[in-house]
Image 1 (cartoon, rainbow, N blue to C red):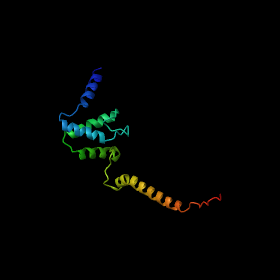
Image 2 (cartoon, helix red, strand yellow):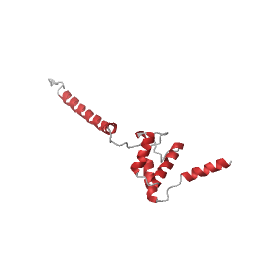
Image 3 (cartoon, rainbow, N blue to C red):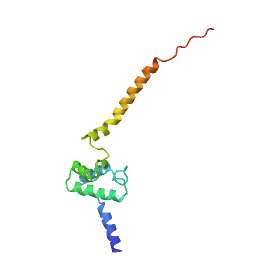
Image 4 (cartoon, one colour):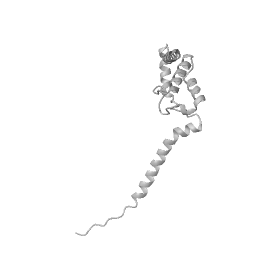
Length: 132
C-alpha cells in the first residue's frame, strides 16, 4: 500500500510544470514538436502513453537544465531516431528527399497533365454540318 501511494505521488510530482514560465512555454512547444514513439501520430503533449509521460519529464529536465531547443531535439533523435520529430531537418539527403518529393511529384503531375491536354486537343474529330 505504501508503495502504491509513493508511486502515485511521484507520478503527480513528475508532471509539474517548470517554475519559470518562459522555460515551461519552451518545454510545451517542444512537447508539441516531438512525436510519441508509442502512439506514432500524436505529440507527447497529447499522448497518455507511459513513455510519453517519461518523454515529457525528460523534456522538462533538459529545458530546466538550460539545454537549447536544438539540444533537446538532438537528445531525442540520438535516442529514438529522426522519426521522433514531426518536422525532420533537411540537412541530409533523406531530409531533402522527404521535403522535396511531394513538390517534385506535383510538378511532374502538372507537366504530364499539360502534355496530355495538348495532345488530346489536336485529336478532336471534325464534325460535319448536317444538310437541312
